[in-house]
Image 1 (tube, rainbow, N blue to C red):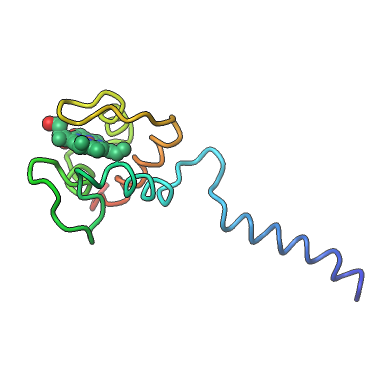
Image 2: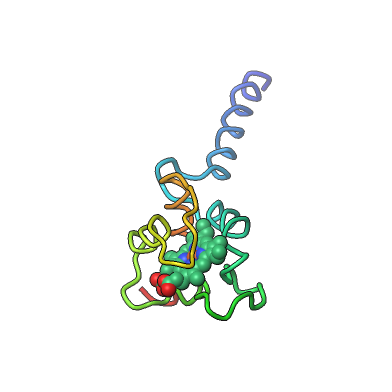
Length: 109
Ligand code: HEC
């Protein structure tokens, strides 16, 4: 019984970590949402709860639902923004997380 406990506790612990942690190499939309709230919500409506910020700035919901929208396209817009959007220094993985978050609002494939 005691031996079983010693073996099963680390296994359970590892299993719960695996559930909570993002899959390595995969974009993490929850992290993208945190980044969006910190970095993008001054200008964009970044989720469906936020109230209007700036009428001239497309909401993330609108961006997500543009025809043919892709993660690559969103990442390109953030890396090389059009005026008046500023250049925001982000790593590739942060960009991918943001794109995954934005695309999570897309209504159809
Ligand atoms: C200072 C204000 C500001 C901030 C901060 C900002 N944006 Fe923007 N963003 C804009 C404006 C204005 C536009 C529209 C520019 C244009 O005509 O394409 C835009 C456009 C975009 C587009 C292209 C929209 C389209 O129609 O294809 C994407 C994607 C985007 N922003 C993502 C982001 C992300 C992600 C962040 C946070 C990391 C961010 N923006 C932060 C102002 C901002």
